[in-house]
Length: 327
Image (cartoon, rainbow, N blue to C red; front, top):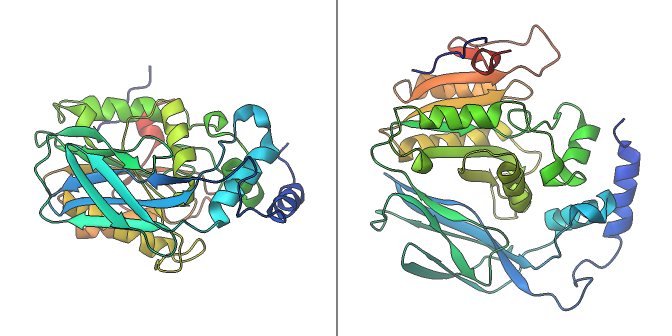
């Protein structure tokens, strides 16, 4: 059982929007530093009771927006990632001694789901690819001895994004370097502590999932943030934005998250999950639905209070995150 721990000025939106429009006016189909080559943004993969799932996107290789290059450069880089089309062609990838190859769709996306999954050893397995991957990705095979998992939202749960303030959200997501973004104090340590408790004999291969409605184009940025701030390694689940996807950037976030969370819970029926979110948007409502649907699998729900309305509805069975973090 998870127990509470014992006590012991932003840039104006006009400037950001104007910079984006100026930068996007350039021809961003060709690379600015020479002939473009392809790379693969590989999503983290996982294997569970429902099989295993691999996915990613073939894109034009872009120079990394280093911190020293300034906010304007990062804005240019990240906006191009969001709006550019994927590449055409084939992707080959390897993990745990296996190799697969598939053709991408018209937007550069590819997916392979297998059920039953091949027999993989527990732990994290590096995923390599041709063309090369844009950042480190892995296949998570949960150790069958582990009994606790964590599912965490990102924005305003572990990273300060200020989703309710759209100007600040835009700056935090597109202008601030991932390593410089502000983590919610104490969250990385809390997650490591919960995964290391006796429920998980092998915490390095526990069922740790980060689920966000942020677009998959920001995968590399969010991985860099999680690594820089010391969060435990986990599967990063982000939203696909494409003509073929049922999701959109401004669409029904509740339906998207509910679908992804159900998929995770069904993949690990022997694991009990602690769910972490915030009340800025719809996490409490989504988690309440899942608590009713999967009562035996949800160990607890912890909500970070960020909404300015003190009268915002609260749900039974959901605790204030401060109870775990302490003062």
